[in-house]
Length: 243
Length: 243
DNA sequence: CGTCCGCTTGAATAGTTTCAATTGAAGTGG
DNA sequence: CCACTTCAATTGAAACTATTCAAGCGGACG
Image (cartoon, rainbow over all chains, first blue to last red; front, side, top):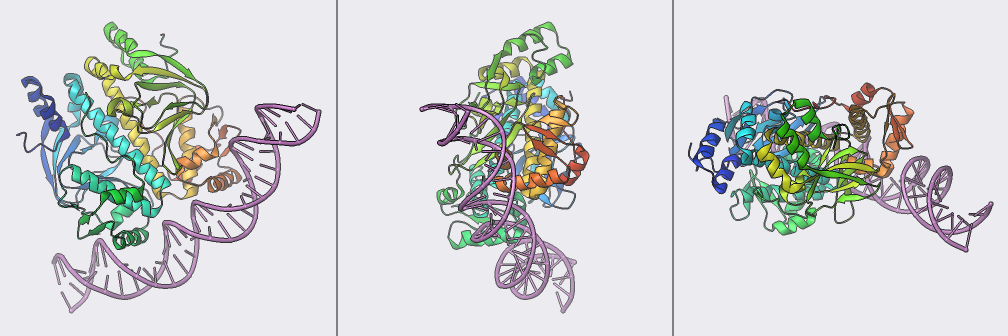
C-alpha cells in the first residue's frame, strides 16, 4: 500500500503533509483495511442499515441521497475524490442516507471498529476526521441556502459552479472541462427542482454561454461569471486542517 | 463549577455518564473556560469572522443563519440546550454562519485553542465532539430533504414536529406545550417559504387541530398525527455516543 | 428491429410569491 | 392619558415561477 496510490485519501494525504514518526505511520496503514473497486451504478450503503465500514473516495464519482416513502428523492451531495463517506454510520450506528457510485469507483476502506482506536492512538488523525466532518457540514449549509433561498436559475448556476470548482480542485479540470457523469434528474434532485424545469434552465445557461453540460462533461468558460449569477461569496473552503 | 449547573452541556454530560478517573475529570474542567449569559436579540458570532470560542447551550433558545448579499436569509437550525455551536470556526478558521440568541441564553464557553489539547489528552471527549458534529450533519440532511422535496404544508408540519420533539427531549414539554419564541419570519426563513405562505399554512394546521403556535408557545396535541402528515420516518437520532 | 433510457419540448395547472393594506398589542414621549 | 410609532400577525388579490402531464426524439443495446 504505497503512498502514491492513496494520494487522494484525505487520511493518508494529511499523513504525508504532517510528517509523523514511523510508529504512527505504521498504525495509520493498519487502520486502512483495504481498497475496494465498485462498478458504475452500484449502491454502497443503504439508509437505515448499519455499515461496518467507512470509505474514502480515491477515484470516480458518486452521490449521497435520501429517499422519502412516496419515492421523492433528495440528493445530498455529489461525492468526489478525497471525500469521506459513512462517518454517520460509524458514529451514530446506522447510515442516514444511501450512497451510489455514478461511475466506476475505487475506494479506501476502513473498519468502523478501528475508528475509536484511531481516536485513542492518533489524535492528529482524529482531528482530521473532525475537520472533514466540519467541511461536510459547511457544504450542507451552503446547499441549504441555495435550495431555500435561490431561484431555479441561481440554483443551477450555483451547482454547476460548485461542482466545477470542486472537481478542478482535485485536478480533473482540462481547459475548463470537467467530468460530469450524473443525469439531469440527479441535478434536479439535488436542487429540489423538477426534471423539466432543470432541463430548461440548463438550456438557458447554455444559450447565454455560461455553462455547457453534455455527454458527461461540463464546460465552464468563465467560472467567475457563473458564480456571480449564482451569488456565491466564498469560492471554496480551505483544503487542509489548520493545526 | 459543579456538575449540576452544567448538566445540559454535552461535553460535561458525557463525563458524568462515562465515569473517568480524577485526572481526566480535572482536565475537562480546565477545558471549560467559563460561562456566559447573553440577552435576547444579541448576535453571538458573525459569518466570516474568526471566533476564538466554542459554545455549548446551557439554557435558552437561539438560531443559526446565513445571509445572502441581497438580504435573503436562510435559517440553518434552531439552537436548543445541549447544542454545540462554533465547531466550524474552531476547526476551519472562521464561522460559516451567524448565531443569534432568540431568548436570553446561558452558555458554556470553551477556548478554540484548547480543542487541540482536548484531542491529544482526551480521546473520549474528542470522539464525543465528532459525534456531535455527525448529529448536526444528520439534522442538516433531514432539513435539506424537507426543503428540497416537501410541500409547504409538509414542511411546516415537519418543522413543528421536529422542534416539539427536540424541546421535549430536553425536558421543556409541559403537557404537549413547549416554548417556541421565534417569529413566523424565522420559521419561514428556515423552511425556504415566504412569510405570507407560512402564516397561511400555520393557520391551516391550527384549523385542523394539528398544532397551535401562539404567544411564544407551541401546542401539539398529537405528535404522531403531525409527524405522519410531515412524512417523518425516524423520530430523533440517538442521544449519546455509542462507545 | 424493437425496447429502454435520458434528453427535449409544449401546454395546462397548481403552488407559492409578491404587493398592498389592516389589525392589534406593546412601547414612547409629550 | 393620549397620540404616535413600531413590530408581528393577518388578509385578499394579482402575478409568476415551477410542476405536472403528455408526447416525441435519438442513441445504445440486446
